[in-house]
Length: 115
Image 1 (cartoon, helix red, strand yellow):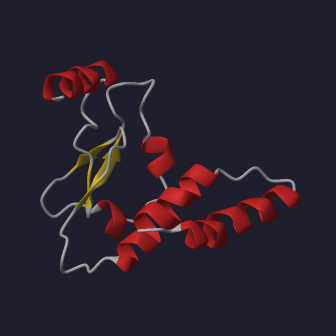
Image 2: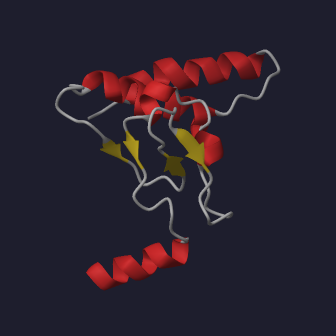
């Protein structure tokens, strides 16, 4: 799925406007909430996919009848929870982070093992 136009419209234009106004927006945060898990979710049929897996280093805490909580990854160098902080609850509820509980070295070991 190509989302280049959406990225330009929803992230780059805003980033350039904010920079021109003397502010320093974070395009990575905008991309996650507006494109990767924004218009991408809008483009796929919600009834077709219950979840979308992402390779981000972050964790989700799911407790019955509670909002899903975004948590840090155990690897402080690779943790990406900060870049996911602007996601809405409806976005977070549909996400899976299958490597978020691992250290980067563990991911490399698994990749070598399954190669």
